[in-house]
Length: 255
Image 1 (cartoon, rainbow, N blue to C red):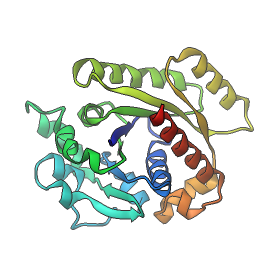
Image 2 (image 1 turned 90 degrees about the vertical axis):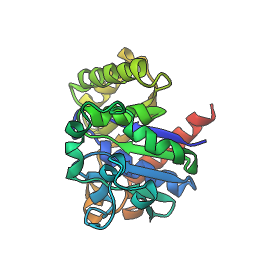
Image 3 (image 1 turned 90 degrees about the horizontal axis):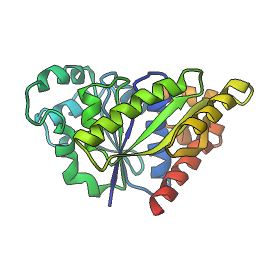
Image 4 (image 1 turned 135 degrees about the vertical axis):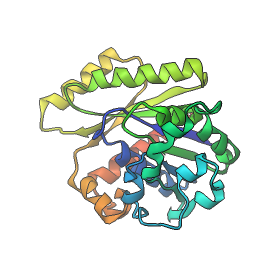
């Protein structure tokens, strides 16, 4: 049975899209069937997989506005085993367009439920904001991955995300849970990164992944080449870290 997982944080620059692309690709590499949905109007996931200029391709906006079928929107095998639904700036208008609709919060859930079991994993890369788009993603999801940067205000931002998740759980999706909190941009040369990790572990009653994503120049370069890290530089520390995260998530599912 497939799982739908949102990757979300209301702060930008925390490695959300990097995680969406590279975790999806590493799971596909591990023979999992994966669908990645770019649910951010900025379209960074689409461009990071070199699919942002496909003008004839229907987008996630077309899908949730009933202007296209899901079959028309899915781009097959952008990486072997990894399918993609792209986004563009039209999605930014969805919040206004959905106002007053009875199914405003469930538009995404309604189109994903019929194909959920066609995949092992469906990942939703959410925008860096807590709006109706993100609420749609959380309502459609089984669980959430929260990437947080190893910085001083990490815990403060995390608490805001958790409040939104618990609100959606209470009002719209009682089965929703936090799959895990992921530390990103870990710099082993500084004490701050280690201190942030310890502070969050001491104050958070949620699953925290053992895998930590390091600062890695090859990770930063890969999107400009339109490739996930396991293809761009398979032997890099970034690629190995995302493979470890993929293995950890698959192991969590077996428990």
